[in-house]
Length: 395
Ligand SMILES: Nc1nc2c(ncn2[C@@H]2O[C@H](COP(=O)(O)OP(=O)(O)OP(=O)(O)O)[C@@H](O)[C@H]2O)c(=O)[nH]1
Image (cartoon, rainbow, N blue to C red; front, side, top):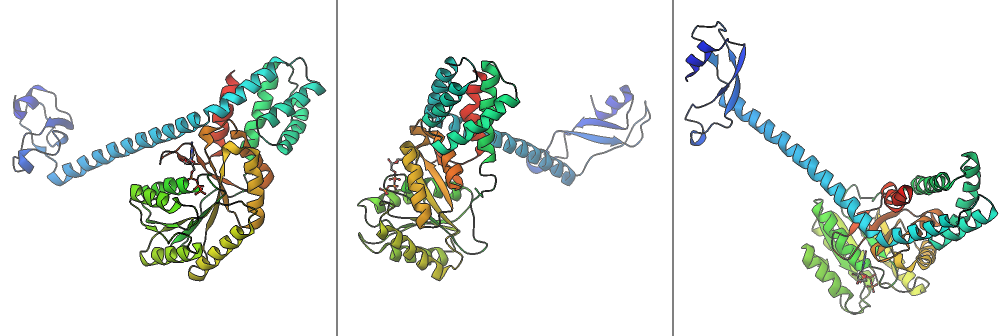
């Protein structure tokens, strides 16, 4: 049926949808869209009518808008999937910690008879056992004494809810005054130093972070300033090759500050956005190491007065309270701007995030959740608390 017959039979409305079969001059004879809404100029039933076909430009704009909307929807879906992936990764990374928490929790609750002194002693012990740190455990128990009374919680479910709510609240409220964001230079390269004792995961973390920032469109350079440990430079070079990021190196046993100097020069000359510096991990009470760090900072500041923006201390979560001790010593000897808690996936001691934040007032900026390049996430207290305690609330 032609258009004329179509309109003759149909009572005509002011706009109609028609299938576009021409003009054939459109690209390859195919119009960008097939069905368009057109305006009917003489809407008189039974008579021949004129219609206005949209121009090719209009159609193309409409098509683009449609495609944009589709792309936006796709991007939204992708972001949702990414967020889902991130929370799944966090969930699975915290599996061991969650298991221990829930075992301790269940046995604590199984012993529950009434809210008395024994109850609060047991609670304190349970919290200490879960690596929240003695100071935090005592403070938390004190606060819970009042809260349990205030909320008139008597049975297991009520008490369990009050305590878990309090823990979640503690995670959320702590660090509220601390700046957990990463800082970047307004102009020129940002320098980020990674410090920490042997084997905590500094090099691996730099590998992960360089991929993270490269994917975010930043130009990254690495400096292998750990010239003491055999193999450290090669390890960083391997990460550089994997992520296609340049690595500045020095000879074995060379002065680490000289590698940092070369790294800064390269970052400036190549207009890089970020220079990550991998430093040697020796014992934190080693005076030489601290002098070495101070020297590196002097070299950086001479070229870039506002750098380094970040001195990130990597701590191995599997070492529990030892990690807190290390953090104290590092904090006393250098300006640590934040913590990267590595190997959370390999430990049941995820609770140590609490004392790190509560006792040291150092923001946890990243968490390491495995050995793969994507196994790192910015630390989000809410997500962390939800993942850690969510299962306790439903038990
Ligand atoms: N499971 C797990 N392993 C990790 C994580 N981060 C690092 N590792 C592993 O920890 C080990 C030590 O990591 P490195 O990056 O070499 O540690 P480092 O601090 O640079 O060590 P030094 O150069 O000796 O000071 C490696 O086997 C890493 O794969 C993590 O988040 N989870």
